[in-house]
Length: 290
Length: 341
Ligand SMILES: Cc1cc2nc3c(=O)[nH]c(=O)nc-3n(C[C@H](O)[C@H](O)[C@H](O)COP(=O)(O)OP(=O)(O)OC[C@H]3O[C@@H](n4cnc5c(N)ncnc54)[C@H](O)[C@@H]3O)c2cc1C
Ligand SMILES: Nc1ncnc2c1ncn2[C@@H]1O[C@H](COP(=O)(O)O)[C@@H](O)[C@H]1O
Image (spheres, rainbow over the protein chains, first blue to last red):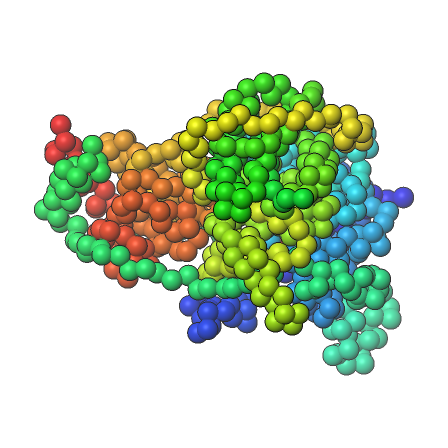
């Protein structure tokens, strides 16, 4: 049996490029104004998986993502770069899930895809920066975890050797499979799209997307089954609804406030020699500089 | 049974209790006093002889020690097994972890096991009530876990009404480290480590470790010269190092400067970097994004050097110098040297 790798990837609003129209007048976030992107560290995760695959001929990578229907975009993005399959978990009932409920849903999908050898996630998603989903999926699937991975060192027999980043250094760990790895942004950047794969998977679609297309499109699918992306609902996963969405989320948002500036008494000054001289003198005499 | 506050204390490479853990004990002490409950802490490691003495000044009531070979350096599964079981056995109601590579590895796995919530990177913790209209219930003294959200553009207060314990991680430097006046020794409970662990918990092995000596001490610096994207290049960062050396400070940076490769990530200040509260913060070519301010707005005095008179940083700076980094910094060095002997 081939070596099976699952990559957990999330589509996120690009919070790093928050423009002026990103916040609505009432202080809430205007998601529509933000581009939806492949979570950056999930691209590092995909590259990590691809490097494992490079060393294990015949290995297969499946991208697993939970999100709204349009999140299928990142599955295709993954296929263009060398992944083999994709699963979209989508259902209104997942809305409002915090990390615990999200990891519950993802863990069901992971179990449904068993047996597998390796699960790879990003360290954290930029929309929340929580870094929780990876370790929580590992706990729920009951496999060990290696977080902050920076490099796939290689195989030692059936075991994986992985270098991970610490605050003040690195360590190399060895783990049997299956194991869940979360990948740090300091790991290798993801390879670019492959032109051939782009042609091959350009038309890959989920069921929801297919429904919006014409009959001719369906024809293509008859002959090329690999174009069909798997799509799972709450029912497909046989998930306990009590553990999903707002119900299954222990954390609740009580209030949200816009970040407000408190205007300080501040001194505006130019950069002339006289002004800088005066500033340094006053900082020295007030013992701020000494 | 009374419900206590519990702190997971990390051991540093040098074998001491980590600063972030001492900071959390200090915060935990205040929270415990407010609710009139006990403050408990757990340390997992090897050869923990000195930790009782190190922790005594922080007013901990009960200290759980899991001291055995193989528990240092940190490995996820053994620490996870011990910590999650001890929390469950003692019914802790609030559990705090440092938001370090260890805390962020351990806490989510523990929260998943205990089926409770976990709020990452809190910047403030306080108590408050919560009323639910639908069921007409009031929750008393919930932990308000306050953190920046959505890329720092908003501040959210998170609560866990029902599924306890309430767990949070906090970054180093966010809480203040404060010892307690005339503390008494904690009650020490030596855990029977074998009871919690099995061989399977050691299936991941450590082949190699390379630990660097702590290089930069930005957190402890009284003066910080921070550079942003506006500094323009790593060459120009040398100007900042010159200034820092002249006035006795450390060099910090924004994420944009780090991402641009001007300087190493160990100097990043802000929500995803270090939190600092120096006497003087000189922001050079820094726009003052919320995520950056989250790590420096407690500075006693702030000087901004910026070519844009309307950059957000001007709202929090005490002195706003309108000018370029290249022009202003050499002048600052020159006039500092002239005026101080
Ligand atoms: C989840 C998340 C977490 C983040 N965490 C952090 C964090 O921990 N720390 C952090 O810093 N950022 C963080 N950021 C990024 C943050 O949003 C900003 O992008 C970043 O702080 C901007 O850095 P900057 O001020 O250096 O760059 P810019 O915003 O590009 O500002 C550069 C400034 O330099 C000025 N300038 C240009 N040329 C000159 C010159 N020659 N002389 C003087 N001034 C000049 C410009 O007028 C401008 O004000 C985070 C973002 C996200 C989404
Ligand atoms: N909805 C999701 N679908 C797929 N993977 C996810 C999802 N949410 C989180 N992940 C994975 O978990 C990692 C950590 O996410 P977070 O805990 O939200 O910071 C991400 O980098 C992804 O690999």
